[in-house]
Amino acid sequence: NQLHAFDFTNYFTGTEADVEKMAAQFGTRVDAVLGQTGESRVDVVAHGSGVTAVQYYLANMQGSSKLAHVVYTGGSYDLTLTVAGDITPAPCEYLTIRSDGSDELQNGNSSYGELDGATNEVMAGLDNIELATDPAVFEKIHAFFTGNAPAENTLIAPVPGETYTVSGRVIEFIDNTPISGVYVTPIPIRTLSNGEIQRQIGGSPVETDAQGRFTFDITLSPDTHYEFRLQNITGSHFDMHVYVQPFREDVSTLRLRMVPRGTTGGSQILTSFSSAMRTGDHANFFVHTLNEAMQFADDDLQLARFDAAYDPIGTVSVLTQGNAPSAGVSASAGNTFILALLDYDQNQQDGTGPISASGLNMYGINSFDAYMAGKPSNQQTQVTFNGRTIGTQNFASDGGIGASNGGFTMVQFEY
Image (tube, rainbow, N blue to C red; front, side, top):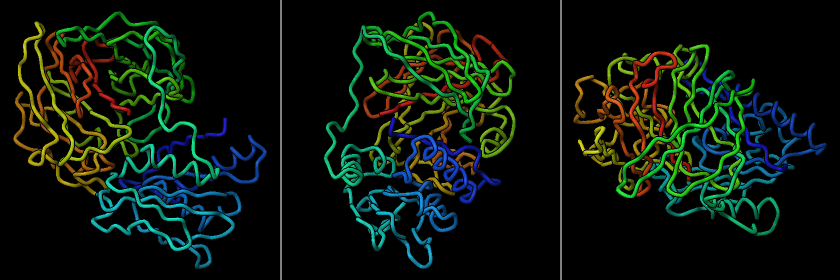
């Protein structure tokens, strides 16, 4: 009850992040938390472009009167905003956490993100996402807030056979806007001893509320992960099949993303750059790593494809030096967290290299031309990221609303 996670929503102006809009949203949330708790100040952890939003709030919205401890991790930009010439205005206390140059956003400058007047910590070997998620980083932040080491620094794995309550939220991809009126059906995916996956009978669907939230109880089984089928009854978004790893015991919110059919906000870039997103008999995949950046020199992402009889029909390794997509406006080859995999040229073959489409090479998104057949029934793809495998079935990208074999697939590695 002391932690308040915050999502920025619909904060793009054209194709660029609007820092003033982000700061205003942040300020509204700060006021709401203060009103709810009766406290006079809040502690803040900001990551990436959120760092710039908090700095704007301090510099232009009298934020120093409402913040106490301020933590900047993996700042995406030079930390130059000031309040009356002061980059760390009182009475707040400041902590910065940066890498030793392993964060690609540092551009090789190991001092990038350091602030005069702050406690500055260097975490060797961590990438930009790890600067917000690594247990050692959590320990630094906990000690900065409380003066004490945390009792635990990792989440506890779930226990098969136990029943858990899972809270989820359906949001728009890319804009993070909540989507109401979505039927969410949890479907167990069982992995057999030979590696084949079996899609089980799904549970009863639940509907998202005005904030895109839903809740359900689930009993975990061994060798099982889950698909969430998302169907928007108004047809404003594509059907989605989101595959996730088994849950951690104390996950509070599972974020599930839907691709809009319209062209608004930041999502316009995603939905309008190519007809290949919406036509053809192939499956469109998005591979998402919530807590890690994809480092093309270090990581391994493989797609193993199978026909309906579970006979192999080809494997491709995507995260290799030769296949690394060109850096986009704010994404670089070492800091991708969503990879779009689709038959870009619609030739039903893997491409020889990445897609250099500016529409996808932004916001930590990159892309690759890989073919997954979407029309045959029971055709499956197994996605392996750094030794962790999530098995999926293929769904045709041109399926209509509610089509049994239609929709986009998102494979979500979370920890």
